[in-house]
Image (cartoon, rainbow, N blue to C red):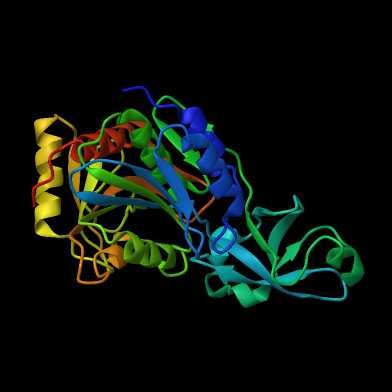
Length: 332
């Protein structure tokens, strides 16, 4: 299966932190508009794209928002203090470049600390090269959000870049909806907002769609690097089929059907039992009277850093698994 990894390169480079997903939503809309029957945007900002079918109503959700940093104060010398939007690590963020929506670039640095392990966001600042508060305020306002700035790099095996979480899920969803021509099932592809701050977009989208089945696409952790925490998921071992995380214990019928689909189509897979974190399915499965839900996860190293890494083979196999699952007659 050939995938357009150039599209993934474009997706990870589009600005779209939680609560400000307008630019990435417009990008995805233009990419998929010729492959779906209708698109609409709900009140919270989710992009919902429908491919009509007569079978089960299936919601496929991948979040398009990114973690970021929000300016909360600018001092007299032009240094910007910030808070986190989503899961930001002080140590990982130290000395990283960031970019604001208007293109202003800055560097994250910190006040001197005796013990780097005790570094906190409140001790850190963004330096945009301004020499006064007035100069900084010409470029950045309180409430503006910046995101990590780094390169997309690939080789024959892997991709490493910021924001695979969860632009790689969006990528897989886009490739699937382009591939599926005449769906049996009634497919609602959701590119959700504000996942990184509490699965908020998926909650409202699921309430509106009221699906029979929910599937989310998101990254998961790894257990295959030196002295990593014990975890039976690694890169280049296949699509990860989630059993549980802190937001969901996946519906057994959905989990079993994903496993059967992988086996029937000779798609490499691994089972994922994650002891932390969550995905959009955590919100979908408790919508209204409840929605049987599962997750296809992309094994990813160094999540929430500037060098998130995933295997190209795993991305391909996750796409195959999603397509074959959606093309099945889902009698559950």
